[in-house]
Length: 93
Image (tube, rainbow, N blue to C red):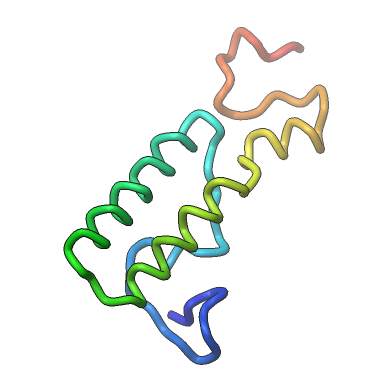
């Protein structure tokens, strides 16, 4: 797949690279997702992985730190509507 945000006509099969620019992360899962990316970056740097892999992981960490969580965007755009992950008891008739 083409590397979104990468140099022109650059392709990737890297698991994080395939997700760049397409994040759908819930606020409650963001910290774990970011920690996983930071850990992968640290490990890849330590192991001397190829510069392209390091670049993808750095871009992943930047995106995850700034991307709005989709559940928060929904609540902002659709005030008063329940989001699917809330308990049923919290949904008003």
